[in-house]
Length: 182
Image: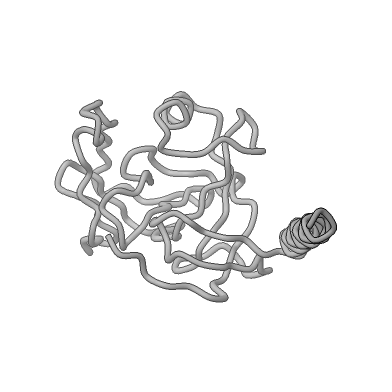
């Protein structure tokens, strides 16, 4: 019986190490797993695509108080970005020359309303969320509107504002994704 338990332990250890090795290898190769509802759930791959409207990006939040508060409140995860922030994945909904409006009624890009963009006044624990206002603001070359168009609960540009292109670490493309049940 001891021999069987030892053999089972060895198989579990080898399987665990193999899984860790394979996960590391895939990550180094460019695979990224999204578990947030900001973009479709699933597996993404880092690409060489340019940053443009319609792409998904992986970015490090800038070291600003809003992101420190988001980390403390659990809206974003800790990670390897400056400030101890984790990478965020969002869709690029507006770039240079697009006209953006953000107010309590939602977000508009080039006078088109973005579905699921109405900001909440408070989070699920009743804590106040930032209230941003941009009126017909033309984005500069360095500015991006990074948001979801599929989740009402995403922590995105409607709360933290525009992101500088320099914060983007990679453009990512879906490999295997699925819609979440929300």
